Image (cartoon, rainbow, N blue to C red; front, side):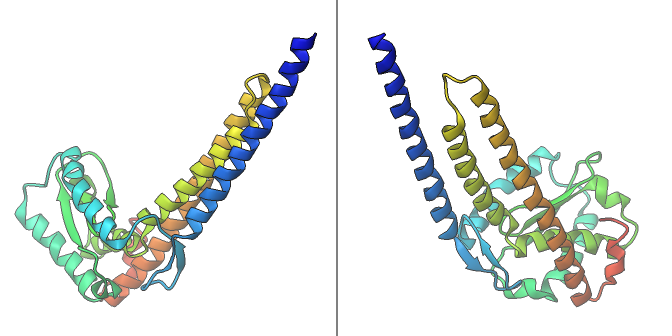
Length: 234
């Protein structure tokens, strides 16, 4: 009987300590997130980013070779790559992208099956041969690449990193606060907290896509392309 009373008090102390640790983790995550606040020079948007522009560029350059290898290497057609370079240069040199320090480089990937285009942090942008060959006009290609350049300009990668760090910190704190090894039901509560964090990040991704659509339309118009060409490919 005496041992049971000691165990119960010890459990309450343990739960209280776990709650304090969870609160500390949550507070640290929020403070760290708020400290990354900056204003995007192109969009004018107040945003929270996890890394500097220099780090973004370095990260993109470091990851580019791996991405190229993952999609079958660079496309062997020099004329197709030259055409892609021409379209990208038209967009970059005639839009707000020209006033930034991002190191833009557009690469045609050899993958003939995966229909995709994407951008790495810092300016490395890619389109697969599968998507490139499906496009019917130069305007459609410009629409795809302008959208990806929009991701770079808006710093979506760095922004997503910061959001994920915040979400991971808060959900980790929620899991710690909710989970009790002596209560089987608490495990389900902890799992729900993790699922909520994942849904939050998914929402941010959709918002990023909409912003890139908006920027892509603007960049196309600035470069002399008809933005309506984007409708058929996005």
